[in-house]
Length: 102
Image (cartoon, rainbow, N blue to C red; front, side, top):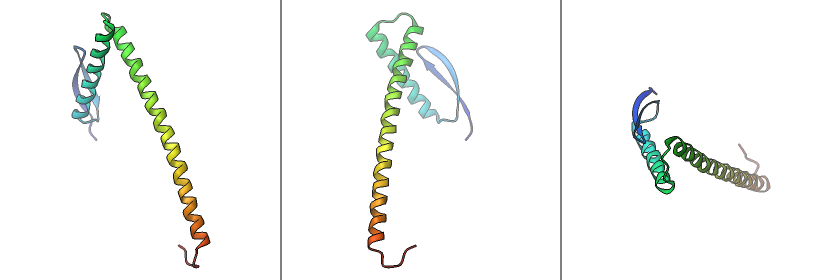
């Protein structure tokens, strides 16, 4: 996939993003970040953009960490259930075999 350079505007600053992602996805993420920053600024009344950006980065990283942990836990549970089901099927075939098996 070809890389594109897409201009984005984050909190009144222009950036050029080099990415293989589609422009629609970059626009969606840009809107998310801008809304997130605006929400924090309304709640905390930050004047310093660096502090605002760092707090937003920390909060987004915390949310990401929670989502990643939940995903990993869900994946482990799913793996256990799949293994259990495969064992049930294998046991069934072993007990009910008619002598023909692949």
